[in-house]
Image (cartoon, rainbow, N blue to C red; front, side, top):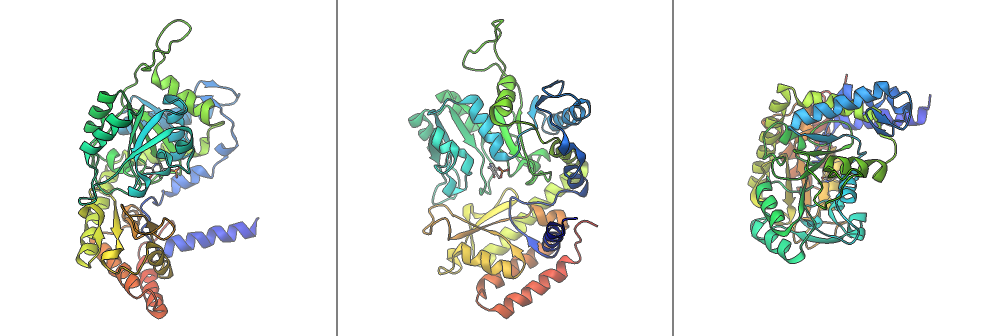
Amino acid sequence: MDSVIQHLIQEELQRQRQGIELIASENFASQEVIQAMGSCLTNKYAEGYPGKRYYGGCEVVDQVEQIAIDRLCALFGAEYANVQPHSGAQANAAVFLGVLQPGDPILGFDLSHGGHLSHGSSVNFSGKVYNAHFYGVDQETGRIDMDKVAAKAREVKPKLIICGASAYSRDWDYKRFREIADEVGALVLADIAHPAGLIAADLLTDPLPYCHIISSTTHKTLRGPRGGIIMMGKDFPNPWGRTTKKGEPIMMSTILNSAVFPGMQGGPLEHVIAAKAIAFGEAAQKSFISYGQQVIANAHTMANAFVSRGYKIISGGTDNHMMLIDIRTKSPDISGRDAENALIKADITVNKNMVPFDSRPALHTSGIRIGSAAMTTRGFKESQCEQVVEWVDEAIVYRDNESMLKDIRSKVNTLMSNFPLYP
Ligand SMILES: *Cc1c(COP(=O)(O)O)cnc(C)c1O
């Protein structure tokens, strides 16, 4: 028994049990999902795809992976799915590898406005290998201005347009993105890492009819194991005229599968794929729709409560599970980092986040990002969400008052003891 690591795992479980988790990208996977990740499937090498492996003994994991693929396709109404990407960033890397050449222009959502590193940031491989351009939000409205996206696309002629974000509280106009892409001859990738669960529950616009390729994580609102996926609503022949030896057009499904393996990754994590299959099954239940509805209702409640306490929500509200809060309107002298640090003393976890047109650098920031997905899994309804915002506000206002923060923490811990996590 490795008592050091076992002890730390118990300590982390205790932290998760007693605190309020508001990080928008986190959730609590079911115990069954967690058990699958801790199973003997981790021992199996299975390079390749079901029925076409480079190793023997894959009869069982072939079934596991095929069930994961079939369930994912059914959940989103997709014709194609790849469940092997180890993470969301890996899924994006594989899509880029499959559809782009080094140096190709790409157009993504600006990281400093809520986009993701893997969409062309200069510190990420996507910004080093490809010629990255960005669209952002309008300073007044906090929303993406589609006319500006169109103008930028005409200017930079991207080969790939990426929609999707890590800190954007509004739904996406995928139809318009597709029209713009068709006009300039680009493919559209929708990275739904954050809202995937809400899209699966039919509570937000479905990107599959409009976007050529969909990538996602499985651990955010989808509430599965940590991992990535790639889908297509419809498979289609590659647009570059590549053919097989027999002269038949190569389908995009073949190109994307080869990009994941052997292009980007080696052996798949079949234990995680088993956990993905379980999570996709859970997301297909009726109860997952009510979960998604409550996630959105809770986010609305929190957004309204923040606004009524003098905070500014970027774009004025939320359509999904998250919100980006500019805390400068409440107190101009406090940074996102200060707020994050004060809240952690009260056992409330958030992350500091740049707001669009931020006056502070990335390690300080003027904002915090908050999401409702994890606490909704714990059982929070509107009334608890009101209470949480009151505590968050108090902790920010009294950030230098240690006894006040301690007091909030004990109230947080008492509340959370009524919302048990794992038996
Ligand atoms: C979280 C996120 C990812 C990356 O996921 P990882 O699993 O951390 O690699 C990719 N894209 C978007 C938009 C995300 O929010």
